[in-house]
Length: 192
Image (cartoon, rainbow, N blue to C red; front, side, top):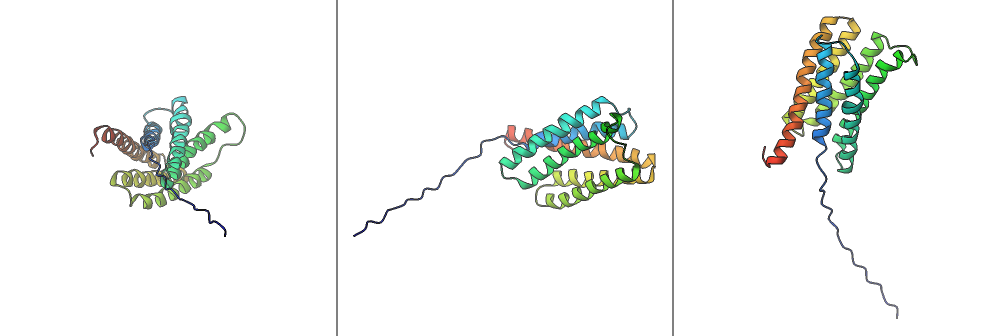
């Protein structure tokens, strides 16, 4: 007579106690967007401050937030933060690499294609926000509009369109700052 081995299965529930990375990503995006668009609106020249923000807070901080969202199993957050972090790094590369004489600068048609593709990506991501909340809907819709305006400004070489895009970008950036800070404050006070 053979004995059957008895097997017992135990379910293990893991409780996620890690911090919410979304405020970091939203603030990295928002502050950098406001500062770049103050330049686009004509308030100051482009310089090291914008490039440094693009590398460190807009770029690296958002990539870190995206990786943290991945750990939480949030595909939308991972895709958004990692993609926009890499957007900032690629934008800095587009601005700096020609100055270092590594490559020729992209012409206005190439830049308008670059910005248009980011606008298209953002518009599709906006559709995803329809299942999240109004604050993120505003951030993503205003960002899509910003990308399309910047693409149009480059395509037409019309500085007025770029200036309008700058003002719209300031609104977009501040909406992301508001959304990120609201999440921090709501968590601290345990209410909306």
